[in-house]
Image (cartoon, rainbow, N blue to C red; front, side, top):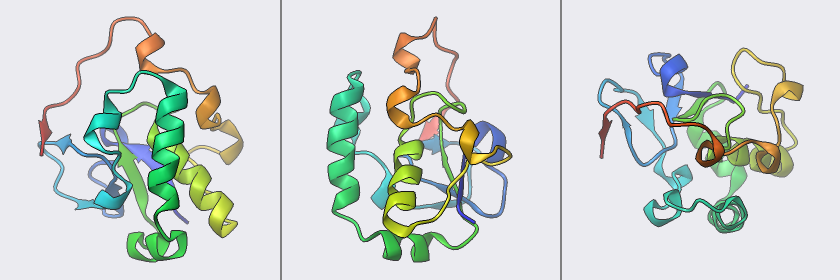
Length: 136
């Protein structure tokens, strides 16, 4: 089963697959760049713009091929905490819609995951927590 998580929780898992532009310096796992949002879009603080433009990226991909390349037990990783607006939830929703599968957050029931458009943004939160150093 494909699941989602973040670097802080699952970076050392053997099935981890980073789907972000940057990764923590300690991350030595697999990366899948077709699912990484373009750099310009990462700066978008408008969730509707991000949603619309990132869905165009996803729609340019073949979901079945993506799932095969990721592997059946892939844990899709990026930076955000659980239920903070994050592209990994969009990827999960896209895979669910295209393939008729369920893509939960690791160690959570699918019902616990808020839809992307209902997740609070890190930009709306209090002062941000420091991010781990990234490599490009």
